[in-house]
Image (cartoon, rainbow, N blue to C red; front, side):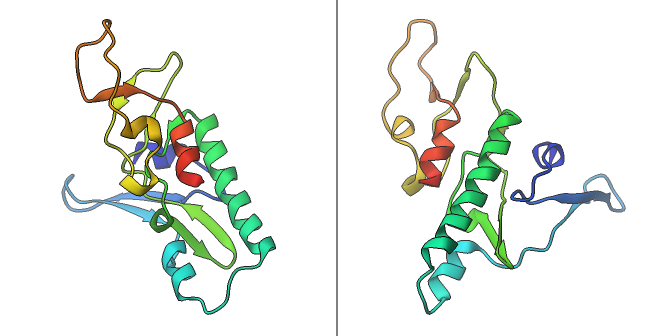
Amino acid sequence: MQVLQDLRHPNILHVQEMVVGDTLNDVYMVMDFEPFELGKTLRTIKTDLSASEVKTLLHQLLSGVAYLHRKWYFHRDIKSSNLLYKDGVLKLCDFGMARRFSRPLERYTQHVCTLVYRAPELLANPQEDARYPPTRSILYDEKIDLWSVG
């Protein structure tokens, strides 16, 4: 919730407001209505996208990801089902794996992102470093999101 409330970009799903129900356990996020996942949309259309349509979608995705990184967040789960599409506008959603990062880099969990979109540095076994005890965490940066975009 914190990540989404901190972000305002035309290519990132926007949280309109937070609503608390009868108890503090009933918290609802009111978001933009974006009915179509890009992955499903691409599988159901009958024609191929034109080069200009592909460029437009890629530009929107990269614009949203660049903004996210400027705000010091990783998404860590970019995939077609986390891209919403309506009326020519693409929006990045599902920030459940997102987290803030900083410089110098810290160690982050290795098992993020859907396997087929996972960057090579996340798939490789982490090298042992005498400064850190053996864990399932490794050093990586925002480039893991760019691998997923590709």
